[in-house]
Image 1: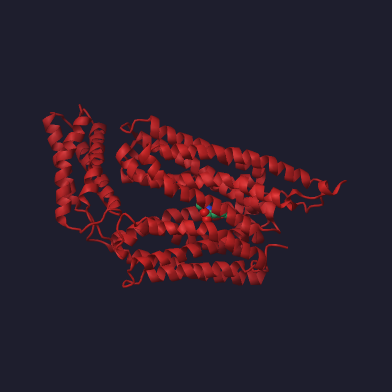
Image 2: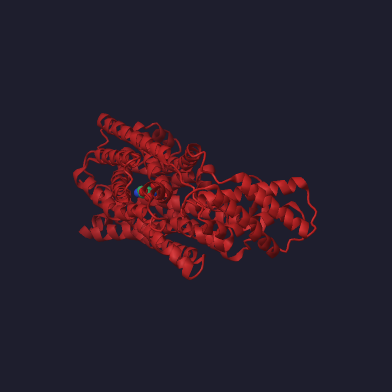
Length: 560
Ligand SMILES: C[C@H](N)C(=O)N[C@@H](CCCCN)C(=O)O
């Protein structure tokens, strides 16, 4: 037998780095699509008449199947049972199907068609089908994430594992950067659907890249056929017990949810936060949070490389958590309100967001055996996904409770909507059921108030009652035009609700022009982030202690 046949393909740097690059292509597209939707939010509002509630539902739909139907956990088990090739192929195919469905719904379905569904009530068909597409994409995207992690471990164990995972995350974050940089300009120049079409093309590229990876993976297995490799017992369902009874595993999972919960939701609120606290103009507010993903593209592999050579994985996570705590604590100081200070803090947050992931993900294989890794990553992702649903909700509750005086004047808006409805119904002599009318008025008021709150995140000016009154006046006048366009001819509940939808759609340009100001005080929300940072530091130390006790080797280099 020749030397070449006896050597595992893993030993060839060209082969393993090619495998890393090829397999990461699917995550590039996934991260692009994840951010493309939120970047074109204002276009979706004006082009399709989606309300902020519709957009919120759509964004949240990413996790529907993963969280509520436990699809993420099933993906992990399937990965451990059926392997990287089958799971990765199915996962990337799910992303293609989900994106295609989303694109079809946004381009081929009428934005006026409505449907009544249990749980959702009266909802636009286009919104619900887009959500379904995005939820299918979400299943594929998270399953691809765990499959890629296991693939990297397969090729890089005992080698540059953290560097490879860091580069894989960099390639994914390049997708985020691409979305932030080009989706809005693309939507403005061509159509609101162009960024989604690009996402679909990237998903196809990801699928083709994964098929290419399968060829490499098969070659790797073939190259190891004749080698004496430690045979592992196959994965059994009872292995889940050994994962969830492992203390160090839980520390990593808890650190993951606390840490990501203090970064991703912060980024969501950051543009408005820097406008309100640091008096940055709304035009530039988006640039400060954008510094974060760009910085991580370079730093995550750098810290991964350090972990591979020098070890200190638990220490790297603790340093990252301490930086997170410092950043949020400084952001909470009321008198430190110069914009440059905020920019520096976001850059430091970017360093923290490179340190923790660069050490956290490659530490999992040191605690959990390879045959159970799919399930282990899946459980961590699952807990993280729950946190990313719950933490923003908590932040919203705290924000509303801390700002009781800055809500738009709901009563005034409601009365103007009532006037609009009554005028249209009287002019067209339409009969209706009073309870249907009152439901439609309430729903429209909710939509309009919600879009004011969301829109003013980006268009602040002094807050006062006069602004709201001007808006109310405008609603009445403009909604008559909107209602006429509807060619309303009956007083059924659906047609009343449809009229309400047209009313809310007509208010977007008005809200934007009025520049209503709702100046939020974010102090309590930032304190919540401080708490998450503090808990992350504590959990980091607990992980380090547990590692010392059990000898997992988190502080040792990855490269043998
Ligand atoms: C969003 C996803 N659940 C996630 O947490 N992704 C991580 C990267 C995980 C890669 C593990 N090898 C991220 O930091 O984006």
